[in-house]
Amino acid sequence: MSKAITNLQAALERAAAIRPEVGGFPYLAETLRRAGVSRCRMAVPSNAMLYLTDAGPVAVQGEPLALGPVDVAPFDREALIAALRTDQAGGSTFPEFVRGCWEAGVVWYDVDLNARTCTYHGAEGDGYTETYPPVEL
Image 1 (spheres, one colour):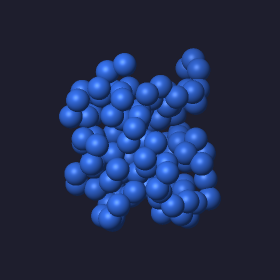
Image 2: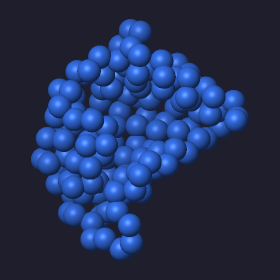
Image 3: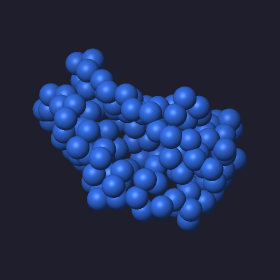
């Protein structure tokens, strides 16, 4: 196993141990940032996350949301914000959040851990960016 994978797995385990159930994403993000992760990019329909780390990029493949050809929903900013608020309130699991993004027409999102932003993208160039607050670990 590479140093990049070992570092990432350790950071994810630390974050899981310290993050609160409500409003926990900034704790996860800060833990990853301190472990040398600069960006996280999620390809939503394939449920594949790419972590860009100081030790090298690491891909994590989850269970795809769809197999074969599927229509992509139009980007729905309000539905995306509803999925975000539900997740931020502790009302969804990560897989449920990813499914909510997909249903809102999000095909990929990018988390910039240094700028503390999450940008969600639709298939036709639509997008939505949110900032998240800094936290002390």
